[in-house]
Length: 380
Image 1 (cartoon, one colour):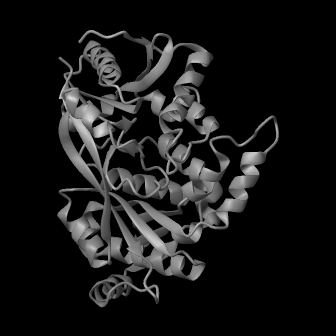
Image 2 (spheres, helix red, strand yellow):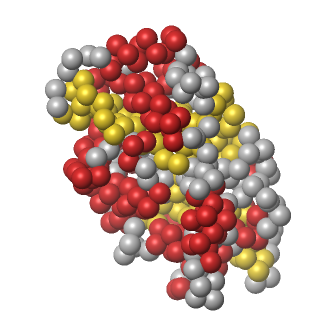
């Protein structure tokens, strides 16, 4: 394809800043986009501050046309993916591009060439940088703002992917559950939940701030066990998990995070958070402006108006999956959210072929309202 687009690796702070700020070009007229905090984006890309870089390799690229940035992408090689799935597959993510197929093709070819140089034969994404982070391209449900840690993109992105030779790998479904008038799940769910909660060897409790580190360590262990067979998953190191929870901690409400113990041993958890995007939107990507904490003040004021929660992750140890603990934990979180005044729960994301999880969510009153897609292609 003849093109005037040039793609180069990102080098130095100035180009990193261009990489971080380029999305403002794509979303300048999109009222639903929530600008991520620049400070957090810079830390995410920094090998000294993001523990992912201790195990995975990342190369960032910028695409330019006549000197103007028109796109960006990250190419990723994670040895844990190869070890778990026995496949030489690389990942790509942080993709943003103007509506220009030539620019998109140049970016994908650069990432593909880098992955091939790492001995990888296939690319899967967008994953920024794994299924433990933001995943997928929004292909359906463009009418609502994104919730925390969920991608948002222009409606033309899916066409760019298909025109550049990508095919669907997997769809990820998002469900919303309007808060019931009494905060209780439907009767058919409630009966199963009460059986799980009333089992003599089961104790369900919220995260305990007094033993925060121990509870986080238990959640990390459960997470790696329960997600070990999930599509495209990779285990998280202790530093990665602790780092992720640490980033959420300022707006985390411990009473929404539920842990189930069986015979006193942590067996399941659900991580539920207020939708911080509702507050983050007010900061417009910056905590400070001209040295003044304007964005921080805006976030604090906006956080009082958060009315939605998101169930980010739920995990149950394999030996306890038949106990119905996931439903019990979500019910306890919903009951707490009702008392705190939240009006809606989002459960996202779920694999399209995870029939049990999707069926259970629908039984809770869930409405499928958004779909993200993972794409794949060979590196040849």
